[in-house]
Image (cartoon, rainbow, N blue to C red; front, side):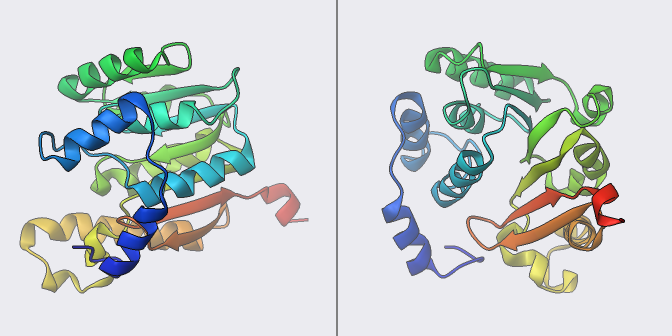
Length: 225
């Protein structure tokens, strides 16, 4: 049951979705059958990202949160032959699954996995080096990772962040949530407020999947002229 959109709308959107091929389909099928509980992007979110990548034609993408490699493989098939994806993952079990799936997909030359905690790795990446940053990791860390996401994103680049509505809970009072969820709720609200009110970004929140935010990095020099 969706807490972000009406179930009948979600079902309709997913009926419009063209299923992926080979390893991506196998991953989806394994989850649908209940054999695995791997976190992957929802079909309607995948379609949304597909449009963004097709429109922007990025050369370099940074992903924060590899999981089992589904999104990396999916995006690698949308970028040019000379494009590249750098993805960060901290959990060894996920990394091994991702490496296996990336190898099966034949995408080793287009995807590089950086093993470790994003809070340590992000600071080592160059300024304005990515056309798209896709953040799909621990939701409570989004606000902490945001400064580096903006810094590493090229002017005119796009920041895509998944699961920002947290099953609709972000729109509710924190006191309607279990105590263990309140810190994440507060941090997500801070993240969404920041991206929609800072001069560096022009942002919108789209209620598909579990909520997706899209942020365009402004040219502040041009804006201040």
